[in-house]
Figure 1: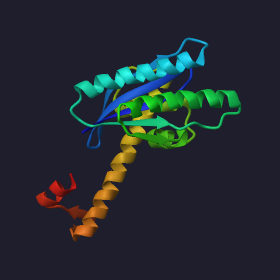
Figure 2: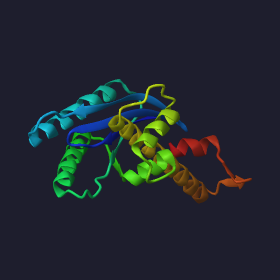
Figure 3: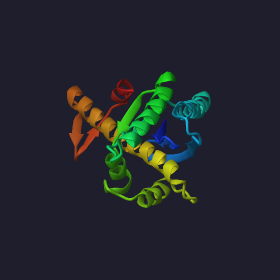
Figure 4: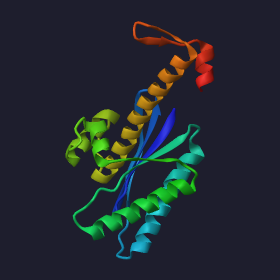
Length: 194
């Protein structure tokens, strides 16, 4: 079991989504946006940093399982000023997570959309709809919050696939048997991998 915090950085609204991963199953925990309704960029960055810190500290306090974080990478915008502001917001979000000693994984918008929708150029509405389906949500989250959830889902899928690859590599190195396409593990093997 693990908790994954996904972050969709933005200088005006930073979306976040939190899911719990238990094997292949993902469960919705929380989602929302941190709004920075001010013109001063330093104040916006402070609000992003403080908001994400407060939310994450709450989950660190009450969660027994490990917490992982994932954030969307900056894309190249046509407007350099917008790209710079987005990069600063992203930096504030990463700094908040790193200050809490959490590892941050980064994914492109295309990777996130591919993981959630199966199509790397999906529209925001498609992402919202697929997030609702994957997490069995009855209420559609706001777009930035849905993007945060999508980022968390992408990390869950990515880490789950990576764990399978690592497990298969470890089994080959241990001389484990393979029958009908499946690795057969002993209780000792499972204990050694944890």
